[in-house]
Image (cartoon, rainbow, N blue to C red):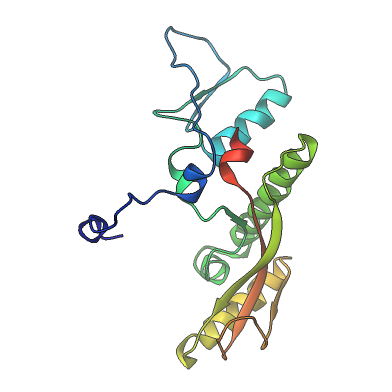
Length: 188
């Protein structure tokens, strides 16, 4: 957002995740400690990794410059997905199918692990599964989307071409499932 334009808002803009949950206030590190693993960053990835390591009896410390769940993860769309634009065909074409497969599997495994953590801990973070749409309204990108559809399908990610979507887009569409959570609730 253009900061210059933001000054005209009567109220300062704030992330939904920050405005809808209470702030975290964990104590600062006051002395040297010894741990097996130090995780830098108290966002979605850092807290999830710390949780999984702790389950394996690893001595873990999460180091966060400010507040847990208050920085990058608090300013996201809260979308947990393996669909990141048109990335899989590009990976396959530039560095090979094996690395594209690893990328796909890592993303799908992360989605599975986050859902498992939510279920095991009965975290009421409004987890939902929805469709992600990649679309174009120009013929220029149809082949790229078709290449992506073929690639993700071959990598084992469920994706499909549809013509009828709930948006006023009339051209080629690739759909892959994705999930949403209330990030700050999940991270507490």
